[in-house]
Length: 297
Image 1 (tube, one colour):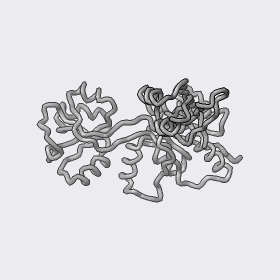
Image 2 (image 1 turned 180 degrees about the vertical axis):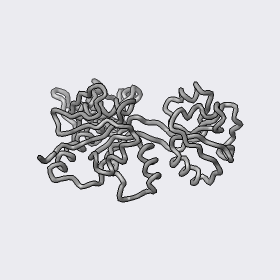
Image 3 (image 1 turned 120 degrees about the vertical axis):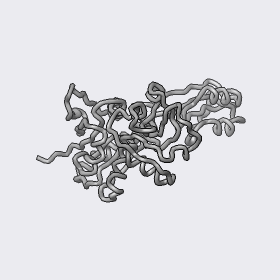
Image 4 (image 1 turned 60 degrees about the horizontal axis):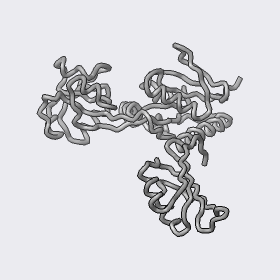
């Protein structure tokens, strides 16, 4: 029997996992994971889900075990550097997803006399991302020693096995709790949708394209707003320029008022109170801003 279901790998647990499930739900793909179950499937879309460690995702996708994967660019780039940029095994980035944003940074104890990047000369840096750190060292012509650890990197300076660390930073709370301060950003990361370089059957290609379109539509809708307002015809050009990230708006005549028009526009950027105040000062009235749930070009 031919299996025409596509398979996607996501992180088993953690923030990236939660956000990935939310993305699938926004695409109209419903999956109910069961406790400790590593393989799930959708009943309303031909998609199966594999829940794995995030650092296994790039390999599973490049080898064709999974057709797609959702992973942080930090993990993706670390694996790419580890393989020596082997082009034949490279995964294609389909979509930057905008969630799970963080940065890989060098941090040192607060007592460390840090002035600039040259202060790290001859330092031992503990990290779980040795290849990304080495790439940073080489690009900046630094003389540093890398100590590779698989976990609890933040306690390395207190144990005396490193002078500083290179680890993922989101809010900085973990660094603060361990009396460390961030001094250099090595790599900025966010979640991406990746696709296997392996060729799909014609039927699976159709399903994969449909899936990609849904993800793209979900990301377009995320952060976009639909705005409706009334505007004097004399201020039409000014008001259109104030609409953030808008395509060509729809302009409609108002019944019973020849001096005003109704403007409907899709804005690809957030609309803040300051923007609405500027629109009102320009003569706009009856301003209504609506969230966009779904979109498709």
